[in-house]
Amino acid sequence: MKYTIQSAVDGDFDAVVETTIDALGDEGFGVLCDIDVQATLDEKLGEEFRQYRILGACNPPLAHEGLTEEIELGALLPCNVIVYETDDGEVAVSAVDPERLVGIADNDALASVATEVTERFKRMLTAVATEHGPKPEA
Image 1 (cartoon, rainbow, N blue to C red):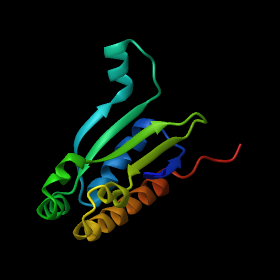
Image 2: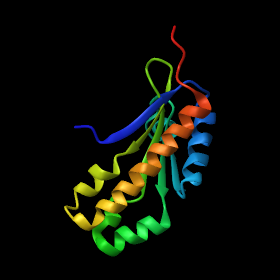
Image 3: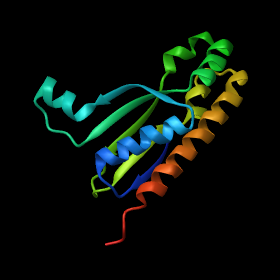
């Protein structure tokens, strides 16, 4: 089951993270939390892991609209966007598919919010890909 929308780019990992945060901001999302999975796994478990960041993104007006329709929606918020190193040297940017996510709630009143978030996430992914470009062919 596919539950994300994504793009893979060629670029410096930290630069892609910053571009992603900026592109989210351009779409009205703030990043409420930034979890460095690589650092956390190293600190807590002594395990090495690829560069991997989880960005908890929230658009307050859309969150308000969704929570007004479905108070339990908060259990699914914020919407996560991940940036990670792939096995072939690219940097992937992936966002939860909002339409799948709110489908869990089985509330038709959330469809317009999900569509709006999906469109904004797709524009964010396009902006990141435009800034960093796809990985060149070898």
